[in-house]
Length: 79
Image (tube, rainbow, N blue to C red):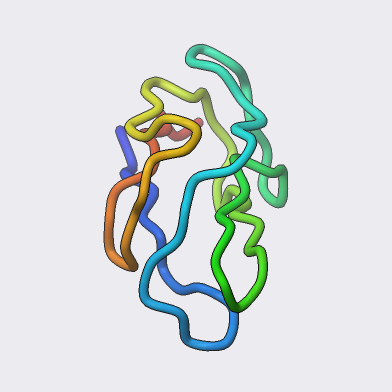
């Protein structure tokens, strides 16, 4: 089953940010709590971590891209 990872929230109720370092690549295994990427905003940085175990199937964003709360970040094939 493919699960879409979305930007749920940013620090201090920010609405958008810039994708910082992406810590995973497509086809990488990932476990609960592992870092997917970091989002930088004027209010601070937010680390996005996996909520499931699985395999990164697709990275939807690129480093430096502007994203908003609710945007898709990645797709994970759940174990």
